[in-house]
Each structure stands twice: as C-alpha cells, then as structure tokens.
Length: 177
Image (tube, rainbow, N blue to C red; front, side, top):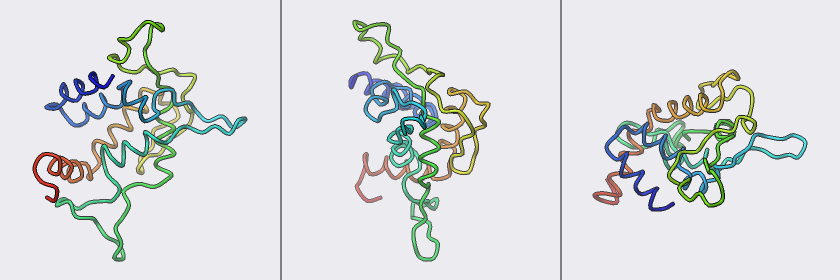
C-alpha cells in the first residue's frame, strides 16, 4: 500500500493540484490511514457521527492550512490576531461529504485493491445540504458529486497557492522561505 501511494504521488507530480488532491482522496492507503475509508453517515439512534479525521487533515495539511494567508504567505490578521481559514462547522460538514467511501475489494485474497480508487456506497452517504467554506453542496448531490464539489472548493481556495508553495519550498529548498 505504501509503495502504491508513493507511485500515485509520482504519477501526479506534474499534473494539476486538483488532480493530485482527488487521487490522494480516492487512495485506499490514505483512506485507511485517515479514516475516510469506511466513513459512514450519522445515526441519531446510536449517536454515531461521520469521522472528521480526513476532513480536518485535507484542509489543515493538504490544501488551505490553519490560517488565511496573504499572497506572500504571511498570515492575514484581524484585530491583531491571525484569521483561521476554516471552522469546526466546516470540518463537520466536510466530514459528511466524505461519507460512503470504501475500498474496491473483490475478496479476501484480492491484494490489488490498494491500487484501485475507492468506490462509493450510497447507503452510507449522509443526506442533506452540506456547506463547506461558505459554499453549499445541495441535498440533491449524490456522494461522488458532493465530493467533486468539495475538492473543487478546496483546490480553488485562495490559500492553496501560498500554503502549498510554502510547503514545497520548505521541503525542497530551505526550512524558512
């Protein structure tokens, strides 16, 4: 699974950021590691809520970061304090978008499933509107459509350029750009 994940990153290294974000999201190794795989809709009878791990990490680590940034990468401020880029409500709503995904495994002896994108199981998808970063995915959107809309929202957020640019500079050239 780890080798396949490394291959996936290499395969998408020179494509668009949006395509990479989608490939990582549908990846069984990432889905297993950050609890996207098997994430199910809420169940009021048992108190179960969608797992928020991948929703939080995709925003915090893979796309927009914790703070709103200026184009030069410096934090935006309001009243002298840095401005957060998302809220707990955004995490909760995005977690609902990320319900219903699971591995595409043919059987217990199918070890190639880690190389295939996850599939959507509609019966595990959270119904209703989902509002992420001020944009709403309507209740009429099924799981795959809601996920595509959410990835578009994240990939097109103005923070992606300065946040990901800084990460690349830190990893490939120097620790303090």
